[in-house]
Length: 435
Image 1 (cartoon, rainbow, N blue to C red):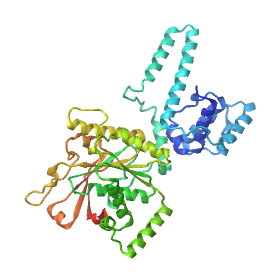
Image 2 (cartoon, helix red, strand yellow):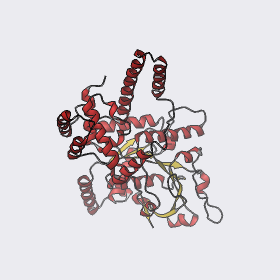
Image 3 (cartoon, one colour):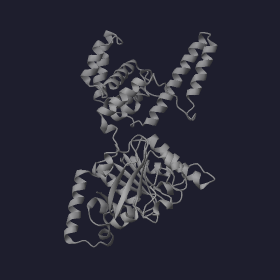
Image 4 (spheres, one colour):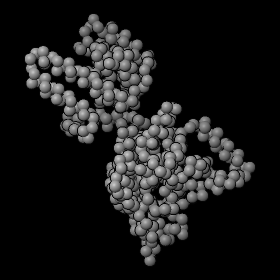
């Protein structure tokens, strides 16, 4: 079963990695450790983190130990030495993921439950032993498909979590948009959320994804851009233009002036020095791409040391669902259910593009356009239900001649919606400009 070294490594990770601790402190309890000093040390870490939203220091732990009535006085020196040792120790085994901790907790809970069942059987309490066993078997069912939460009992935990997010926004950041006026409407896209740029063909959906991606990497956010529609060459070349500020066609035809070549060289050197390698492009096939394939690519990147903080997907409408459906409409819904579950499981923010129905791109006789709403997604209205945010792009006849696009906040599950901003097309440089 789990060795003492595994328990020690988990404690060490909690003392050194705030993100790891924030991920597991509501899963792990002191009773999941077999060694008594580990039980107390983890209890002290967890309680301090819950109250102050930060990892306790050496002085905090030693002061708590000196006051503690849970630890016998004759054992306090031993506990103090263990705390000091753990604070300067690095984990021996590999870094544990959220899923591994869930499995660890489940295994330990099962063993402890079996021990309690055995005690009840030895005491002759067969009925109580049977109930304990039934309860444990039910809790082991990972595929039951639902989760029960006691609202009142867990209120303090939510308050502690909200406080922690307030004090440590760097661990719970939103991906801001590249447009300042839009950022006044929304905080951005956060972990577990999916946003979509929805519009008809040629409206600039992919270009807006590049706008978000360029903004993210300049903000030093590690980004993975999955491209299904365009080639990896086209996608990389669009970033060349967007980030380096040189028109796309110049890159495409390699028609640089001497001054432009010098500018490109300076900018690339500056980017390497200032932000480093923050963007990975993953080209996925148009036939047969599903979330399992994309997850495989993310894991390969992680094996190479690159951990994504933001996912761009160009675009979800071209994917296949993991589960097969008879109708195309349900298959499209299945894709969005899949990517939503994937982002929730990964706790990552995603921006994708969605094709709008053709009628949202056809002006009437007066040049007016039907404003794309959350139901504008073609083939399946379920897209609008599953998405957390939807930015729709549209142009009146007059705007088309002026090169202006309206960005409409069609859906915002956790904030205001219905507001609009105006953007100037600069597709030669693969971007939209604020007006």
